[in-house]
Length: 196
Length: 123
Image (cartoon, rainbow over all chains, first blue to last red; front, side, top):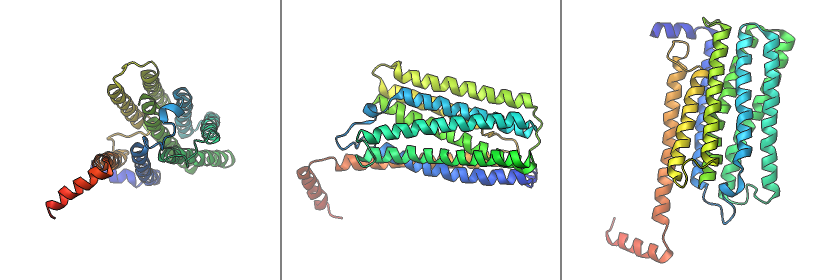
């Protein structure tokens, strides 16, 4: 078993995937720190509104469905590319980008509404922690969208080379990871916030 | 990335993961908006965390392809290690800050008396 494991790692794609995976694991630690900060500070509203007053679960639920669907289309796109189905893969990648952009737009609209109503990150420790946590996730989504567009362009101009498939596998890993982080954002920030 | 699985079996794995995640998301949303647990908010919070963890498990297997086969075993090991780090960071922070809050949560006069008592004990 051990010998077999080392043997498969000799493949370039597997090595790249493990290296990228280790980066994602360090990202988990960043999000863990931000979640811990948010959980500690969430009741320190400085007399302002709390999570239950500010957030609309229905709005966050729509965002959840959009991101989950984009994670799904991205996964199917990765398989399609693996099996050489270029057109199907590109179509699904386009769907992923559209859904990801919709998600980011909804998030920025929510931020805009909060700031306009005077609940910006300066208002309280709770809001500082909220904007840092959700904003960091949103920033990752933005980077993911740029990455998706670049990889899509690469596949369109260079065709489905082995390298292109490997690059796309890493992107799909990143995108699925962001959806997993969002599950906990949705649960802890929006749903648990509504309970208390 | 050649694999033994056929295209169809990959797609059905993803459809299964997507469907299950969808059901779990809808369940946690309804749990809050329909007030399934009434006033028992601690129970509802526990339920939400269980649903989120279940979804984490489903997506880890179906989307992130964690498992025990030789091609993913390193990923699985580092993932479990990172999750334990995550729990230490989050639970540890909450524990320490709760404790601090409890100990500092008194009026200045009470704090003076408390410190006076503590000083009498000596270091």
